[in-house]
Length: 114
Length: 313
Image (cartoon, rainbow over all chains, first blue to last red; front, side, top):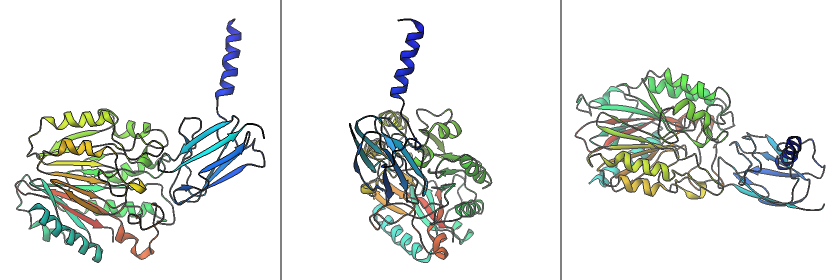
């Protein structure tokens, strides 16, 4: 494999592996929304079709994060009324938690097909 | 014996909570005991004035950057806490900050805390982090600013006036579903750290998340604290100072006394008294009754350190 081909392969691999974190622009309008309230994710287990953008909004006075346990995505700290969105482009089960309050956990299940 | 003394102290604390006044903790011959803060020099008569008597202050959960409904001006209450420390007489030898220095690690928050505490007129402040200080970057900024040169991931120990102080870090390994955690490396360090000490050495441990199971349902517990306490069991006097829960609670287990401190920013509900932990709104005129600082005094030859909490009212 030539150097340029190797480079191309690397770029393709990166494109596949890199999460589209915080990407609201590509949201389907059928995006889902998860309310964070009283130290809990409003929908602890959510099933969505591939390509769905899920938006989390924090209603607590405490900041929270939406952090994938497998390091697939990681929101910044969401202060009161702040939102964060992530578009799921691969099927699978995504478990997440709040790094400030690790007892807060949730799961998004992404089905292939739409 | 010590149990009885402590019951008395509990009654005393309760009494103080009723009046909204604070207490000062003192280290006396190893174990904490309490006295009323605010009456100033009057209590000083309690200590014999031995040259080796010293006090230090504890501040906790300053949450610099907090702007929620529970306290619209957390900077003002922080400054009030600093003023309280500045006014302590005798002057504390040093200050410990038991974490949640900042609310969300926003740029400049650590500086505000550090500058504020420098103006308290206390020579040195020893910090341990809370989860709010490390969650955004895994602790990189905190460790660089406050823990350079320390072993492991920022834990520390030092001796002062015959007392051995240990600052533990239990917020750096939060995992999904997890709790405060010290980790094997820190536990091994602790075991070595205290191995050479005489059992008569008074020990003060400070850390953010309580080292006893205050309320595991809300994560108010450190899951491997029992191992740490096992290394400390042989000591005649162990005082554990924590923050995190923004309210005064205490417990005695053999020679170990546990104390949690108030915040300077906002109170939290009593365990189980609300659907969830978090900032609790109280009537504005009573807010400063539930915020505060703490002073701890050690007097050689006494059995207890005197621990006194002072509200900001």
